Image (cartoon, rainbow, N blue to C red; front, top):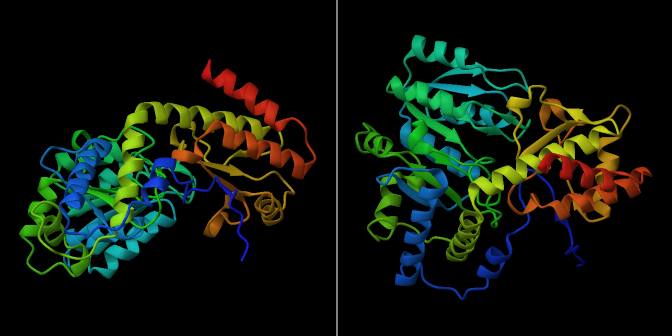
Length: 382
C-alpha cells in the first residue's frame, strides 16, 4: 500500500512530529517499572511544571490517552454527583466539557458566547456569584473557531471566590507562556500532538495541591479508575504499579517537551503570532477574512479564516491534499465556511507556509502569494 511520506500537516492537530520526538520512538522497549523509565518520568514531571508554570507542590503526569481523556480525567476526579459546575463555552470543545460534566452527574450552568467571540467576563462573574459552583471550566484556545478566551482573568476571579478552576490548554500550552500558579488554575491539560508536536496518545496534565486535596476528601470513589489522580500519583510519585504506560510515547513526549523548552516558550509565542498575522494578511489579498472579528480574541496558534465568496471549500482542500498539504475546514456551524490553519509546534515554521502559499498559487492560478507572504513576514517582524 503506497503512502505519501511527504504530507505536510498544517491542521489544528495533529502537527508534524518534532525530529527528536520521532527519533525517540526508536528507543528499544523498556519495562514500565524499569528504573530508567522512572528517571524519564521524573524529568517529564519537572519539565511539565515549567511548561504550565505550575507550583512546586503541583502533581504533573501523562495520562495514557489523547487530550479528550485529559479533559475527562479532570471532571472524573473533581466532580461528584450533584456538584454545581459553571462551564463557559463558545465552541465544540466547550460544549464537550458541558456533556462530560453532565455525564458525571453535575448540575451544569452554561455561560455561552456566540461562535467566533470570546466568553464575556461579566457573564462568567454573574454565574459564579449567583450559583456559587464547586468549579468553573473554560477552554483557553477554542480549537473549533480560533478564539482565545480570557482564561487567566476567569481563573483569578474564581480563585478569589474559592472556586476550583479547570482550563483546557490544548492549543496554548507550549506555544505561549502559561502561568498556572500565578493565574490560579487547579487543573490544566493538553494533547501531545498539538503544540508539542509529539505523536498522539498521551495527555500532559497538571493538578494543583488544592485539587489533589479535593480528590482525597471525596465522598464517592473516582468513577474512572484508569485516571484516578491518587492511583496515578502512586505510580508517578511513589513508583507503585498502576497500569502499563506507553513507554515509547513517554520517550517521544520527553524529547518534544525538552525541545520546546529549549527553544523558549516566549520565542515560540512571538514567532507563531507574527506568522499568523503575516499568513492572514497574505490570504486577505485573495478574499479571505478573519472569522474572529476582535483582534484581541484571535488565537495565534489556530488561524481561523472565512473563505472568499464562491470558493469551493472541499474542492480546494482536496487539491491541496493531492499536492501533499493537509489543512482543516470548519466544524459544525462553520463547516464549509472557514479554514482553520494550525500554527502549533513544528507546523509554525515559515518554510511550511511558504510551501502552502506556493501550492495554493498553483491551484488557484495565482503567482503572488508566496512573495506576498515573504513581504508580510518582513513587515510584521520589523
